[in-house]
Image 1 (cartoon, rainbow, N blue to C red):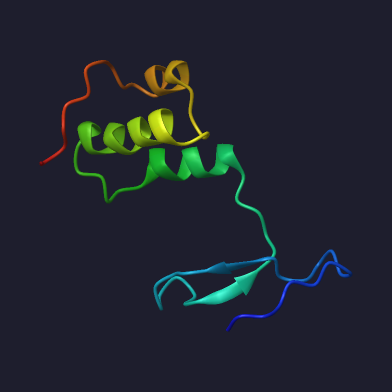
Image 2 (image 1 turned 90 degrees about the vertical axis):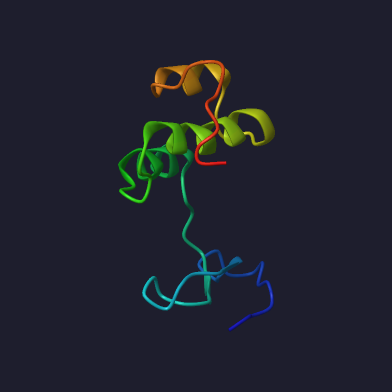
Amino acid sequence: MWLPWDHTDPGAPKFLVFDSAAGGGIRMANDALRRRDLLDQIQQDSRFHTPAERCALYRLLAEFGRGLSMEEYRQRGCEEPLVHAGR
């Protein structure tokens, strides 16, 4: 359920989360997902079947996002050139 932005209450929900029913469903939230936590979740996510699949996501973050530098991309076990994962 969407709620209007409330700048008077620091604890008020500030963004809409689109999640599966098992993950809590669509809801408003005020908690922040920190960069390091996101990268750790990606590293531990068992839905990636190969390192190349994981590196494909890291590569997108490195190239198009602000979440991962190319050095961090390499530190997470990914090398150039990227092997396209299952495409």
